[in-house]
Length: 507
RNA sequence: GGCGCGUUGGUCAAGGGGUUAAGACGCCUCCCUUUCACGGAGGAAUCACGGGUUCGAAUCCCGUACGUGCUACCA
Image 1 (cartoon, chains in turn blue, purple):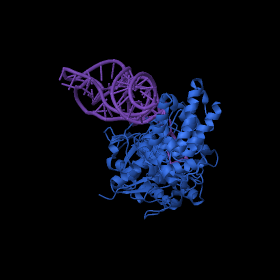
Image 2: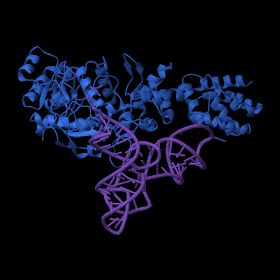
Image 3: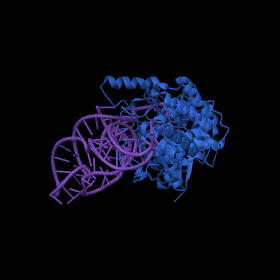
Image 4: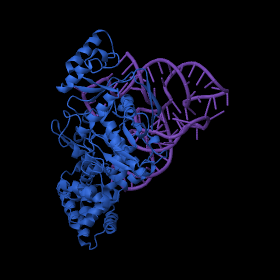
């Protein structure tokens, strides 16, 4: 058997959304699992939808996810070029080959003429308004025109397209790795344009020619392609490449969390969660944040995505990329769509943060804290802080609200929570605490706690009555790790300073 | 409208003739913690509907409903 080769073939038309990343991920997993090659092919045949910068952005996203392809426009292998626009000259020859063999034809109809056909058929009450076997003989194409006229039109380069001549009353069979044997009637599909008037191929022609030329063995794409699959299968057959046709797998859709339909960029804006992997700056509509900017770890992001439509049959939900490579199989991918659940996505991230080492988290957290103006001058302290608060961070961005008090004294100290029970005894306790603390030489958690509790006992106060206040002084609120640990990280001077500050507020 | 694909708690899902129908998210209760989380123990909640086949159906078959996709010189 020949070497496994798969491809991810996005159009550079905008941000890379969840569904796209998942398709790329499944391609990656399948390729690695089978010791094959993962190819990136840019499908930029629609020049009207082309967006500057989208290609590099896609590569950056894949890189962030850790699933960079083995071949692609930036890293050519032996099957380039990897942009379809740069392969333009290849396609015409194949389209003409099809015309010669009688499986395709030239069509000279202008867009207006086709529109007229649609209008006419609609007026007749017909629902199937298609350029197909029922109508093609009424149109201006090489099927009805005399041979000389066709040739004359081609000679003067009259705008034309090449259309496939879909057979009538036939069934196309093929095997889908997820859905099994599929049988589809050819009647339902119209005579798809294969080569456009501008000389560019449509998806239908390009995908077949390129998959063939690039020796693709397995072709994975979204479920939305299923209805036109007969066109592609027929093309493989008409070209005489049937034996090399890749194994198909049509991936389930990722759906909106609430209503119905495919997840779209708009849904993210509407429901308040990202749909892109990384921030995308659209030339027209502006900047849209991605999972990365929101504080997702790439490991968590792809883990979550992989499980949206696949599982290994066990109860395991947290997988590293190598684990997924090992466990992945296309026949365990679902045949039905899944609604995206942002809450669950965040759970994956939380799990990953909890399980990640301080070392792994360090660069991310450092960036986030420094963005808020924190100065990290003590590596040991910094590591200790991460260790102390990582369990309570769902997103990487939470490290700031959860840890800012380590770097900056709390600006808001809500004394109202302790004021009702505040009295002179407590005030006196903290005054003495400052004194005791100032005499301490070894500033460690145990010592801080011991001193605190001993003094509390001497003052005939319960530690519980005092710790809330102590926490408030250090943190500014009712949250965070143990107070004595916080104090030990903060240092003696800073601890005393914060006690004094709050005491002054309570006067 | 036509054609395709699908349907297990609110969501992700395991299970593919005999199960008390796993597990996870979310929600609720309790424990731990003199904070907030983490962690632990519980709880509520599911086989779309109707017919078959079968001793027996969530599981196989047929309908229906619902959802979703396609129906472009877009991918």
